[in-house]
Image (cartoon, rainbow over all chains, first blue to last red; front, side):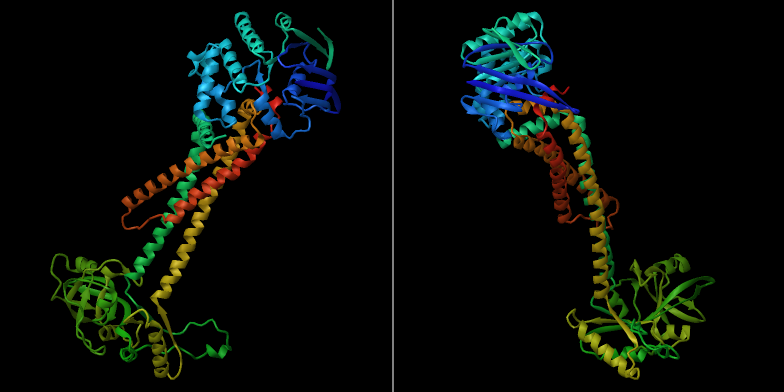
Length: 222
Length: 402
């Protein structure tokens, strides 16, 4: 479902060109579980951003569900993101002024879904992640693990084909980390592709397919 | 996005950043209220002046000796030429014009008046019995000048309330002999009216028959002739007739100036309306200032909420949707400011009217609607730039923003 061919991503910093990605070829099938590891600045976040349509490759082609997406307009990319991709961030990125449930409803609100359907759906997802009792709490009233579970609920509420997690446990204690990873793996078993960028080898090792990046290249794959 | 959701999201953002929101609201509110209060004051001034003029009399035509012209001419025109005086005979002739209801000749001067050793300087007004109805004055006691020919000078006078108080104290002046200059006049009435008239305080006046005033001041001429037309429509014809008659009586020389109260009124109306618009315009500038404040605070707000904008983009919000969200925020702020500003403006007006009941301050509807409209437009215009900037943020950098 994800097919990157010869993808380069270059940044111009001052008068120097930084090659964040160089000739990356990667295919991810539906339902796959993939971890991307590597030192800081190796391009793993850039790769994730390209896959998540937040960034455009400088060169190369990207097919998502057999559709060439490098040529799509910004607005078309936004709609594609909305329907096909769920993001999970290291710092959760919950809006502090909204309740947990409102945060989960946000993607559906942007998509213009009926409020009643929105509420039902958000509550169902929160219930499946076992934090329905926190639905009306604001993020600052939740623990880190709970916040990340709300964020996972938000990422999955539109039923995307792929979940992209950038250091999802980077800001959590060991116990919460295990919980969060368990939830993500559970979602993966339900059929969503899962791509995790992480520093933590313990988490990286769990993935069925592991990629190591160095200097913008995929160094090795297992 | 659904409109209700957009409003809710915006409202949520505004109410969660209370200080910022209140600051912007106050700026907008003061701008709107300023427009309303200032136009109310301008309107009040206009109405006040018009009421004052209306109290001078209705359908009034004023004949002034001498002709002021801006026409060029040889210097000889000015040499050895004095305007002919207006006389009582001129005034009497004007009575024959159809369309004229009444005529009051006027002689004005200042002289010492005294009673039983108490004396003061007082303005003297020589006129006729028709002055009372012509100026809509009322008598407090006694009666006004008797209806005699303009040439007759019965030794009677009517005094204003200040003269009565200062010269007579508690004595009833009606029937007393008042010395005016070197003559004695019997006081036959006291004026009830207040206010000012052709630059004189009515309460300060001593009014005598016109011929009596002319002999006090030793002059045959009139200061002015006041003519009241029967209706407003005949005023132009009356003016024509007055010009013709006086020209014939003055050896073919057109040497009087005729002004109508309508013309003065229209002029003042124009000046004061222009003033009101100008003041409202100045106040509108304060709204532009409020708009710039909105823009600044929106920009600050966007840099504070960069991560939020990045998140919205990651969650699938198009540039268009982000512009809608932020424009709605600016416009909602401006609208709230407009509504509270209109309320504040009307409250301020009510307070002004309560403190100065004589001053008819009142904001016209156009001011309230205009001020609120400009406020919302300002929000929209000054919200557009920050909204566009928000929409164009790079989502990756925005998400990384702390």
